[in-house]
Amino acid sequence: MPVGTLDDLTVAGRRVGVRVDINSPLDDDGGLADDARLRAHRETLSELLDRDGRVAILAHQGRPGGDDFSTLAAHADRLDELLDWPVGYVDANYGTAAREAVESLEPGSAVVLENTRFYAEEYMEFDPVEAGETHLVRSLVPVLDAYVNDAFAAAHRSQPSLVGFPQYLPSYAGRVMELELDVLGDVESTERPRVYVLGGAKVADSIDVAWNVLESGLADQVLTAGVVGNVFLLADGVDIGDASADFIYDRGYWDEIDRAADLLDAYGDRIRFPQDVAVERDGERREIGLNALPGREGEAAMDVGSETLRMYKSVLEGAHTVILNGPAGVFEDPLFDTGTRELYAAAAAVDRSIVGGGDTAAAIRRLGIDGFSHISTGGGACLRLLTGRPLPAVEALDGDAD
Picture 1 (tube, helix red, strand yellow):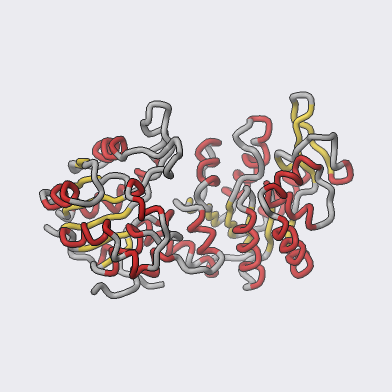
Picture 2 (cartoon, rainbow, N blue to C red):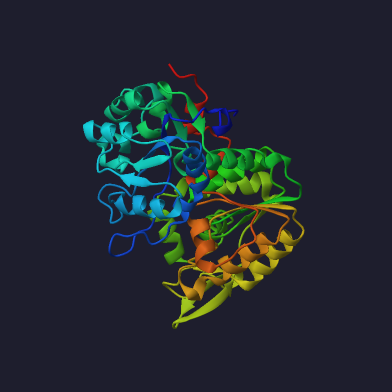
C-alpha cells in the first residue's frame, strides 16, 4: 500500500508526534535489559531531529498487570544516550503537562511522553474514527503539526496512538515502517525456490501463513517445527505422547489440527514436518524417531532431532529465498537449542533470508547468529502481513487528514 514517508514531510520547526515500538525486556531493577528496539528507531528519530523537528515520542511498555509494565523514564535516558540530540521525558501522556512539554520543545529536541498504556483506552481496539475521538488523541492533536508512525511491530493493532492521529494530522511512515513494508510486502518478487520455515507456538497464525503462501503459490516448500510441527504430526496421525498433545489441547488448538490435516491433504507434497524429536530423559537430550514415539510417559517433544535437521538443511541448501518465523524448540534450554541454532544458521546462509520478529529475533540475538538479509521488528505484524491481511496502522496512514 503506498503511504507517505519522511521524504514527503516538511519537518523544520514543526512539532511531530512519532509513534515508535520500544517495548523492551527489563532487568530486575526496572532498567532496560535489551535496547535493540530503541536502536531500530534511531534512523527515523535522528533524521527528524537533524531536520530541526520538534519531536514528541509516543510508545508503550508492557501490559497492565505484567512485571514489565513500567514508565518510559529508562527508555528516555537511553534514547538521550543513543541520539546526538537532547531527549527529555515527561510522566504524562496527555493533558496539560504533556501538551506543555511538547509546546516547549526547541527545534532539534525531543521528549518521550509517558507509557501510552497508562491511559486505559490505549489498551483497547477502536475503529480509527472512534480512536480519533479518544482523550489521548484529542488532547495532543492541537500541539502537533504532523504524525509519523514507525511502530511496525504494533501495526496489526487498532489503538488510539496508532490509528487515531491520522484522522486529524498529515501522517507518514517512518523509516522502520517503510523498510518493513518494502521488504515484507514484496516477497513475491524474491528469487525461487522460496521456502517458509514456520515454528514456535503461534499455531493459528502460522497455519494462516501456510494456507496463504501455499494457496497463492508464494511458497515452494513449507518446513514446520516447534509446536507448529507437533500440530502437523498430530494431523498426520502420529502419537506424539500425552505431554506434547496435552500442551496443544490445553491451548485450544483442536481446530488447528484439523486445519493442518486439510493443508496436508491439499499441499502435502510441499509441507515438511519433523521426522524425529528430542526429549529430556534422565537429565539428558535423547532423540526419538517417529516409529519410537510416544516414548516414555511424561516426555514432551522439546526440539527437532538430527534426521529432521538433515532433511530441512537439504531443502534450504537448494533455496534462494527463505522466510523464517519461530524457533524449532525450547531454545532457552541449552539441551534443546540445537534445532533452532542449526536451522537458523542454515537459513542465514541462503541468498535472501527474511526473519519474522518477536521470538524469532530474540532467539537470533540469544544464539548470536548473524548473516540474515532482513530481521523484522514485528512478530504479529509480520505474520499478518505475510497472510495478506491488512495492518490497521498502515491503512490509517493512507487516508487524508481532516
